[in-house]
Length: 517
Image 1: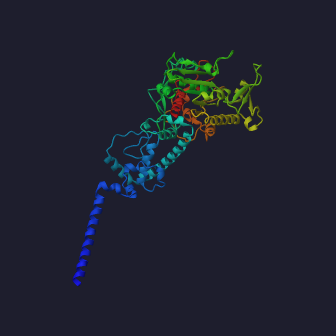
Image 2 (image 1 turned 30 degrees about the horizontal axis):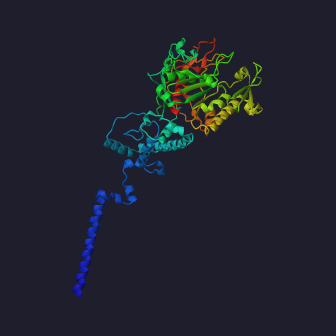
Image 3 (image 1 turned 90 degrees about the horizontal axis):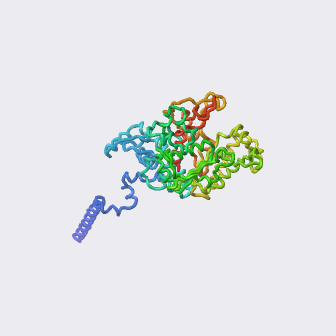
């Protein structure tokens, strides 16, 4: 009995030992055999993600960043989708446009490890990542607003040359909207100007072609605007016409809008005469009326790409209506709450609309043009609007919101409001001896502000699908680029410190517009 009992116990112990040995071997084999990894539970498989895979995890899934290592991973993800910021292979907080050579992964890891143990870098990384997080969050918010403009935007090309390798419409929208083209500085570029001031006679008015005047310094032609945190897509005539194939771009505004129109015509033709470009002004009623000095605008079409560029003169962006059509000297009702009849009629034919106004809002212009302010179809009695500044602001808000209300009807239309072009009259005004004699370009100065220098325009487009083309602050640095005393029809004691020499500053406005489109 006793022997049988001990024999049975011995067999049980042996079986238990054998089972333990087999379990140990099985667990060891499970850990060491790669073929068994697909059998791991999902939670365990997540722990096996490589650092390269973690870089592709959206930051939205990481609500809190608690370590430098996590910050560096998220920071690299931010740089991947941020516009025009080329991520350095040696430094996760490299500045934009900083060029670095190829570095091995071992060297990269070594440098990152050294930076991790530096308290200065830990602090710097913390601030940098917070700034990037805010930037990316803003990017996605802007992306949603941009997508609401219609499916036509999905075809928009990438604005940054550094971002050309990114694929997908989402990334494209984030890049285009994230770049604040208004922040930056002017730099010398020997490849400028984009066209010749001597050769663009077919499209450029002689009064703005400073090469045809007695001016002798042309350093202003060699400047290019360089945004701080992104690279503007290089403008070429072929790229522009290809992008605008079967499209119409319309400038509606004052004489500064006309300068931008003529600048774009010179840029689109390379400043060369082109006999095949068609004058299609009649299609838009842009013909010279009897007794007029010039038509109300111009329209030209490039047959090869079916691209139309036009300009319509509307100095105030308010609708003007003669009070007595039988009287040549009649007053004009200036409907502050009604967009110009031309805009209401031809808006469905436009694919890109650029609006501007500003410098005609003064009592002298009102008196000379016999404008009488109307609101609601009757003479204005609102004292707040009766003030010139109040009337201008009211009109800008009115026309921008009207255009915004039309964008849902025309999903192929993109609308832009260009901010006001600065005046540079020193030691007086245009009629009191004001001058702009400086001929030295303002190099080294930067525009760093986030807000626009034209708060009225910025406020008008806020909350709408109309895009702000902000050129005020960057143009403010260029007081040497005006017509100055070299005007062909100059008046003694008067200088033109409002309009620009062409080629010149308005070319940059079009480069920014091209990047935004």
